[in-house]
Image (cartoon, rainbow, N blue to C red; front, side, top):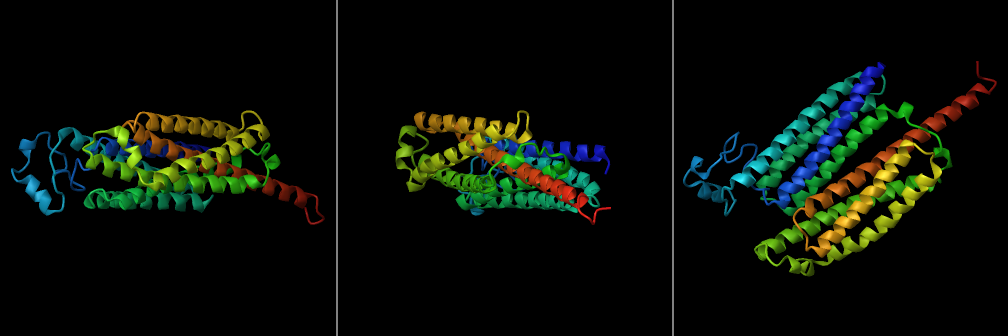
Length: 338
């Protein structure tokens, strides 16, 4: 296969992953700013493809119109409307990026068709995510729908990362991987599952915060944490288990793999993200859940899952190369060789 085609696919795939992560951060910021219902309809915004810039551009009875559709207390806010609209435009750009990635993957049909199918699945997942976004709006930001929307974003990232790493698996570094304890594979699976569970609990906590904030008219932030239900305390305690498990993983990769190894570099990145998440958690507790910290908290968790999954893919690819090379050596030394 043409090396330029492989390189082009890798670069486009990684660019798409970065774009998805930007969208996850922006989506969190939209929710933190209360702009999630800045556009009460979908795919249009207040019935227009380009939203209005003033309330005078809307029908006089627009509030009653949307109240009849189930959106009580709809009030046009130009800042929130355009924040949500720009978020939607970014979502459309993600669809374009993934479409281009899918096109670039066609060159793998004869070389490794799995890469092509994974990219097709990612494109279909983005289409489903767009539809799911419309259901989130239609449900007036129903909690369960928001959680599902978040999980789908992680699935899309995982599919893209899988396609990119699989396209590069013949050049994944093998040095030092054979010395890693076999339990690393199980630990990687465990930390990924724990991170997903933690994110789900985190969205549940966030939904509780939104309910409390609304009930208290966004005042008395110092009382919000006291009013959270038991899932908040489970979420906070579970973070300790996740932290120490990840620290063991980072330490094992660091001490076993040689300097400059790609998995070792990702382990350092994982450690940095863990430290940043801890500091952010302390900030949220001490400063009474400031709005800026909420989207960053979910974003760091998403990045942690992405790094964990990338390490897992690199580890499996390296083991495959080691197994293939060992099989080749055995075959060359056997009476059947040649």
